[in-house]
Length: 133
Image 1 (cartoon, one colour):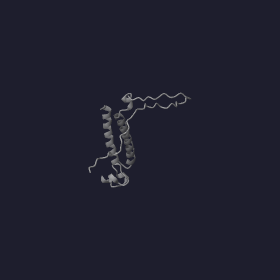
Image 2 (tube, helix red, strand yellow):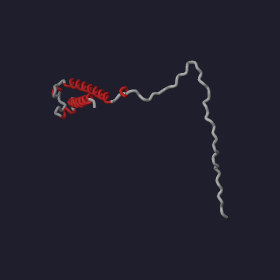
Image 3 (cartoon, one colour):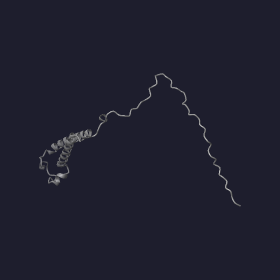
Image 4 (cartoon, helix red, strand yellow):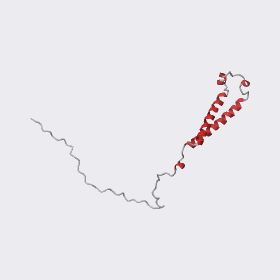
């Protein structure tokens, strides 16, 4: 495993945890989780970080989300091998050369296989059975 993958994975986990905590600290309009910790939907100055925390937490949420997405994309790119790294492909396709412009395509019928003799199919008539009498 590459060192970059390990480092980016650890950063990804840290940013994920920080993003969850930033979102949980925010005070929604209805009180939500802030009410569970004693906020009880009180005035804007009753919050733990002051009255204007909504702007700071919104900026922190957007910043954390951008870092989260960038780390996710970087991990995806580093973890998946690309076709260019795999080397030249072994399967090559060859196409027939194009006919010169203005040439008329050949109307010769395709060659037919030689006829072979076949045995006629067996008779499908029922065979009479002798009856005693």
